[in-house]
Image 1: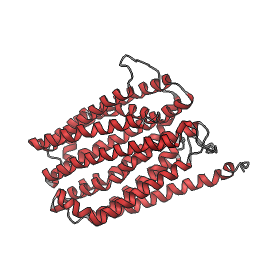
Image 2: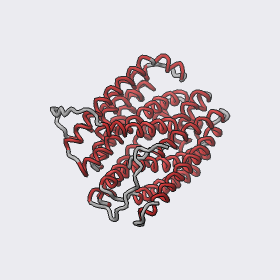
Image 3: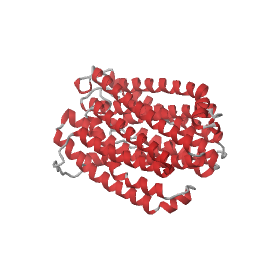
Length: 437
């Protein structure tokens, strides 16, 4: 299996100032709190939507969120590329290198955003018919914000790579505030799914503005440079991770929307929405570890300690989520969304378990991607294929779809952790100072 980088992991001792542990923990904690608040606000909005919309309408609104998450995977890929090279430049480059890289990525992000806008807008009637959505307008409105959303991801990546976690945290909070306030206002005013989608688009534009302000780069700064071969080469592995995340994070919702009855699809959408919180809450851990691992790699230091600490944090979060979902999930959802959602505790617990296992697998993949390794991302892509196969073979019931998710995610984690174990054993002699065999 080919690798972008096949050199041995660095075996340095104590961390250097490039990724000081105390500063990393402090910044990461601020980011985690901000992302927790942002996700809490987003869930507040979804609670409101669940109360004001019927299950079929809620399924339509959740489809818009799912389509946003498809684009979010691309945005995160742009962010990871920018974060890795901004981190490397912080060790062995200059601010000018970072700006040139960012400007080049922003141009490609803008082109991609326009492409998505045209795809959603021009194909709106077809998408509405395919996914049984009442109106085609939400697809058009969502497309309007795509250029701003992809461009802002590059700026977030620069902040991440430079370990500016406080400034990065502020962009997530501002995005949430605009989305929640405007979403509640428009839905309460009677605009329904169209209003909720307009709030999403407005939050994209607000985030782009917030990121520009956080970077503080002059609008007259017109640094122009072609994307380097190194950045282009790295885009391939990130693209593999992107595709795997798209399939795994969103495939089940799309299949359920097409295969289940509208009311059941709405219930499944609520379970998936809450269950996926484990993944998005754990993203702050991956966001913190990724640039630090890249910096340590560039400085010739070891980063497995960061990975194990991150896995422990995600595992604790996952256990708490599964227990909470099992004993409180149905009760909370029933009171918040309505009686239709009251009997989902066991389904929600299983979905949270699947998501927690996927979050741990994703953390390992992100860690090795920061070091320039491709194999784990390829395994995730194959895992997405396994998941899709199991979902298509499952009976069209909520329970069967969730059980297929659990089986697929455990298979994926086992394969990725085995790959990590193989790397660790392979380079153990080097870590002890012995000559390689």
